[in-house]
Image (cartoon, rainbow, N blue to C red; front, side):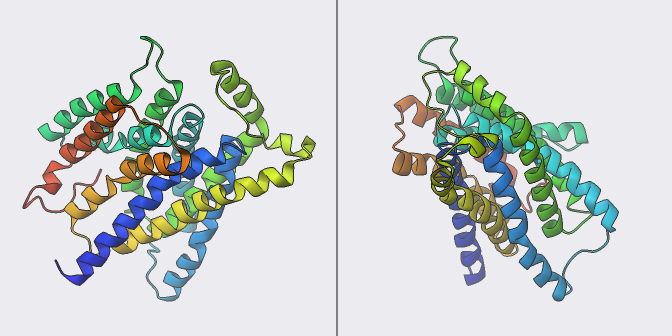
Length: 328
């Protein structure tokens, strides 16, 4: 392995780690602020954090400028809309489930993306269907309730978010061919943040009441955005939420995305596929290390099966001679 490929692999591993520990930040942030408030702040931060890189690339003449401003705005709006539903459901799922569960269940998009690609006339080979079957087994062990029929609502909500993540990947695959990926990312993050702010202003109090009624024994300490104005402890709440929000916005969105773009210029496709699939593993490790989450043996088995499913689905890329990754 040459030095450039080794450096790329290290950057991809760092990216997977940042994204994995991002689930810990998202879970921690929910101790202070609501799901929409958290997403609103972090995605606006994430959008702004990409602006210096965009200006730098523009100064070097390396931005793709084929799409006009109007088309860029429309493309970013569409991508941001789908992204909002993906992250909103993921964040709401974290009200009821662990960071490890959320990380691995979100990873279901790796399996779903090639399946959904059928509707776009993309080839779906046997490894995809095998991976889907293994993933379903993994999901069963991850979300298997102690009482039959009592599925963890957080796991179910996160599964739905994985569907939106898969749709988002297919959409980005289409749009990134038509405009610069950095501009698209910053734009979609901005739209997602604006959507989240609107939701924070309107429906977040109802979401808090719904969450408490659904799981009254769960700890719902977080404050709604509108609740800040009547809460004398607002400064303390915002101070406590600062680190999770900054990590979620600057690290998970801004830094990790930049590292991924830089790394994938030199990383072999098989390396990128394998390393980025470790995001869920980092989420589980971060949940144990920082949130003191407990894992049952069957949950660990579920994590293992989910990881295997991701690799199986990408077998055409991982196998020797597999070539370039099939775009989702």
